[in-house]
Length: 135
Image (cartoon, rainbow, N blue to C red; front, side, top):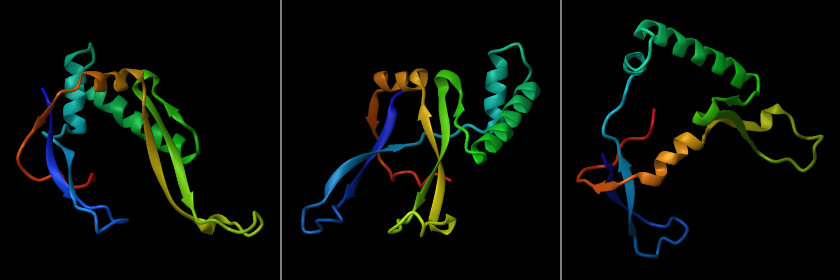
């Protein structure tokens, strides 16, 4: 199945006098829930969906704890998750304190198996609007 995309018109905020251009933006074809994912995994393994659901639930809890403690969570060839922070700068090291940290986020870095799917993607232009921002 091809990755669907729509075209959106964007201007350059740094150069508003320049003409706007059209850019591709992927369009989701749906989503899969945690429960459905567990059922799908169970159908391809010797585990039942309840066992898979429990393992994934505990995995989520353990990853939350490990990331909040500053550890990188490596999930083999699937990829890794790591906390990153953003702060305002100070003139000297002595002036810096934790109140200067403004935000944190979790970065996902896909592993080689997940990256490999990018080599064979096909694309299909569709009508409509781009998806809303991720929740």
